[in-house]
Structures are given as structure tokens and as C-alpha cells.
Image (cartoon, rainbow, N blue to C red; front, side):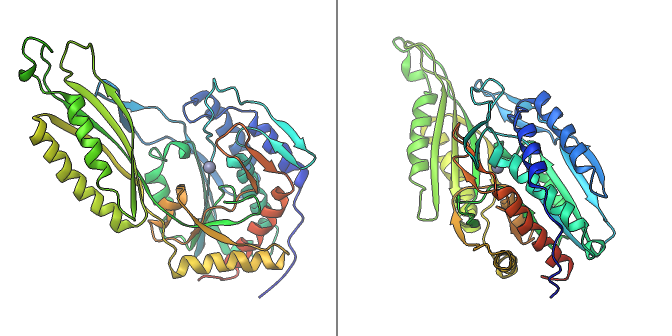
Length: 397
Ligand SMILES: [Zn+2]
């Protein structure tokens, strides 16, 4: 094993990029903000010896409150390809969107103390994108760089489930030796996320028959009552290995009308692939039973969007490699399982070993208290650079 020292990381340049990027609002629906961010990232990543391209989002359909289907617009994704002809290739992924829409009050950065920056996306994950970029810059200065090729994907829709980039993720993951994703560490001390559960989102459009609540109520077929029954039956499908969250019911009308329309939205969190498959078949039977019991029609939209992410033997080797590289840098790297999901779920589903919390240390993400522990920028870039160097030297292959 070579232990050639890595070139120094420019921590000040990293911080400046994070501050610049955090000032651009990139809520997943803010297409203008995402376009500005995509351009800034393409310029920043131009220091790498690769080909950069902005890729159009895949079409994504959704269900409106009135039950009709519509297409949801998304921003472009950035793809950078470096040495695509190399035998050993890896994938690095991040996302440019945040959970804070254009009109959200949380748009400013603020120093909480000399080492802690509060701001939208500073940890999740504009800081992580800087970690990825500077790790690769350091790696490109090593003598083993020419032996490793890599693809970079920075998508624009991770926070809403990566529906407009899921195919692109799968396409880029194919044939890769390993993948690194730059979500913030699971804990502020740098602990990595290990196994992850999966997630699925569903909309059920229920159509009954309207009638007068006083004159002929028996001729009506009440969509709200059918939805209520469906909700209770769905909760009945909960097991040790799956939770179900009925989240929203839309529809109904005046008090004197039997309602003929409602849309039920719910989320599931299967812990294993088997739990997800069992739910898929159970829910089909359950919907059919509700249709018969209430003489309504149910239209199902959605499904499992991120499969559970188990850690197999090859993925564990990648975790062990990260820990070993951390130890060489004086960083004590640990990991723990989580119920959260990210693009690491999608990558793992392609059979590619992935560590998906290679980004910064920080916390309170998805809230106005989100913070970045600033010294972790250079610290985590050093960690990633060493892991990438070891992959280039043949680790895992
Ligand atoms: Zn994130």
C-alpha cells in the first residue's frame, strides 16, 4: 500500500464556494435557481479533466387534488465524465436542490460561532459538493489518477425522491466498482449511515357516486367513507418490517352532498426488499376489497421509489476502506443504520457498493437551524481523496 501524501486541500476556497452556492435558492421547484446553480457547478467542476453536460430531467407525472394526472417540471442534472475508457471506474453523486422553496424565510447565512455556519443547504449538501470537488482535485494531483475513471452526477431533484433522475442514476451506476455520495454525515461527529430502509409514495384516487344527502343518500357511493376504510386497512398492514403513514386526504364537498371524489396520499417505509414486495401484493388485494365493499373505483398511482439499502459483503468492504483511510488521517469513522433514504438506496439497488454520507459534518438539516461544521470541509475532503486514491490503487477490485 502506498501512503504518498495527498496535496493540500484549500479550505478557504471550499468555504467561499459553499457560501456562494448557499446564497442561490435551489428549492426543488425553483427552476431558475436550479439553472443558476447548475451553471455555477459546471464552471466549478471545469477544473477536472472531464466532459461536463447538463442533462434534461426525465418526465415525472403526479396526481392533482382533482384526481387528474399532470407533469411536474424539474431542473437539469449535471453529469461530468472523467476518463470513461479506464478499466476501474467509480461514481460520485450529490444533489444541488434543497428543501427550502423560493418563498421560504430561511435564505440567509449566519455564523453561529467561529467554526459553525448556519445557512440553507450548507450541510445538505452544498458543503458535500465542495467536499467531492476538492477531494477529486487533490486526487487528480496524485500519480495514480490516470488509472481511475469516474462519473459525477449532481441531480436537481433528490429532495423530492429523484424521480426525474432515477434512470440516470441507474445508468451511471452500471458497471462501477464503487460509489460515493456526499450527503452529510449521519451524526455531527462524522458517523456514516450504514443500512437504510426504503420508501414508497402513493396516491389513490377514489371515485364514488354523488347523491343528495337527504333525498336519495342510498344511491350515493361515499368516496370519503371508502377512503376512511382504506386508511384503517392500510394501517392494518403494518408489521415489524414496514410502517405506513396515511398523510393527506383531499376531496369532499358541501354537507348536503354524498362526496364522489377523494385522493388519499400515503408513504410506506419498508425495512427489507421482501417487506416492500409483500406490501405491493397486499395493497392490491386490499384496494380490490375496498372497491367491492363500497362500490367505488380506485385508481392507484405511485409505488416504491427507493428500495431498502442492505449492506452486503462488498459494500462492507467499502465501509472498512473508509474507516481505514480515516484512521490514517486520525479520524475515527463509525457507522449506524438509519430510516432515512437518499440516492445511495438507488445506487445500492444496482448492486454497486456505496457509502452515501461522505459529505460534511453538520446537523439540523431540513430546518432553518441547518449548520455546517466548517473545519469538516477540508477534513472530509482529505478522507474522500484518500479513499479515491486507494480505489485507484486497486482496493475493492
Ligand atoms: Zn441531501
